[in-house]
Amino acid sequence: MSPSASELDPKASVEDEVDLNVVPLDSETPSSLAEQGDNPSSTDGEASKDIPSEAKDIEEAKPRLGPPDERAKVIRKYAHFSLILLGLMAIVYALHFARAILIPVALSVIIFFLLSPLVRFMTRLRYVNESAAAGLIVIAFAVTTVIGSYYLTAPITEWVKAAPSTFRQAEEKLKVFYEPVGQLNEATEKVSKMTQGEESEQVVKVAVQQPPVTSYILNSTVNAATGAIICLVLVYLLLAGGHRSINSIVELMPSVEDKKGLVSLLRDIEQGISSYLLTITLINICLGIVIGTVLGLLGLPDPWLLGIMAALLNFIPFAGAAIGAAIVFMIGVVSLDAPLEIAIGPILYFTINSLEGNLVTPVILGRSMKLNPAIVFLCIIFWGWVWGIAGVLLAVPIIGITKISFSHFKELKPIAHILAG
Image 1 (cartoon, rainbow, N blue to C red):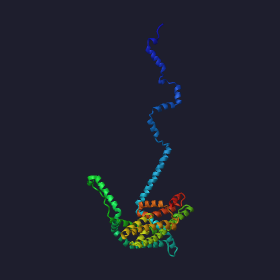
Image 2: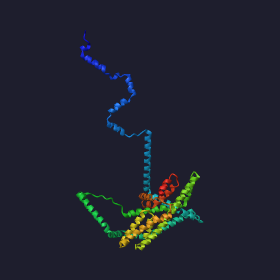
Image 3: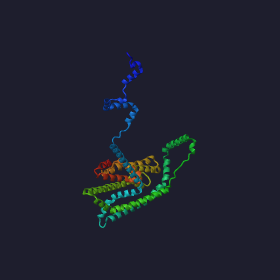
Image 4: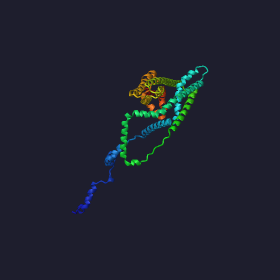
């Protein structure tokens, strides 16, 4: 019996056994490919096993922005908000930049609403038309302003000249109170010098030179005179022809209801502003008389001038009473000797102002011009920042006009309710 090939060549037998057990990659059967095609998760699962866990966390942490339509909506939303914010910032800057023109214009509009009832009353008289009535009112207003300024110039000038000596006298009398604070400041300066060492002596200090006071006063006077001229001319033009312009605007309204709504809006603004300002003016005059009399009985100098000061400062809500009380305190420190007399002046001043603001004015005005105190305070801060002292004086009429205007529109009535408090 002849030997087999495997017995003669052992290497060949091993290779034959390997070829029988191992299937090459290219020899996959169609059935196995079909099974893999029907179950792709097996291959994906095997591939996912090869991805490190940190890479998976990074993939999961990526924000899912969603479809392109949703992303476009989000972008449009933020773009719309950004445009509104930029528009508001531009309006605020424009109000501050153009304050030299806008302040007289705003004041003229408020005076127009204040004096319009008087012009209508005068036109009912014989041989008096709107132009004549407006001219008489503007001339009377200008003459009254000039006469009042003439009589107030001398005492105000004396006050300004005596201000440095007044502050020095007050400083001497109040030294007991602020002397400990001064000692604390000196100790702080010594500690800072010790910590800075000798290098601080070699530091060159740079100071920005400010313009002289006379230049500032001259510029302020010129600006005030220009604003007064613009205001008087514009008030005359509005009173003389404003009603004809308003009638022309009313005729442009498309429907009768719109015409009635516009006329009702203008009448309500006119009535609200005129009644508010006239009432507040009369209340402030009475307040000035009371405060001037009380301060005169306490022995303070120039009580009638202090009364005028109290009447004018009362047009500034919240801050006016505090400023007036501080001025009365300084004058009392210089003019009076007894501590009780010094303290009773500002206390009475602030008490009378509080009674007027919390009792007298709400009872007289009622709910016709009721405003939210918090919003009024914020508006005073905003308009004071934008327009200075003129903005502080115009803040309440501006918010009053805004409240009355918003109350005539259905969509804006909630805002008017918030402004009313």
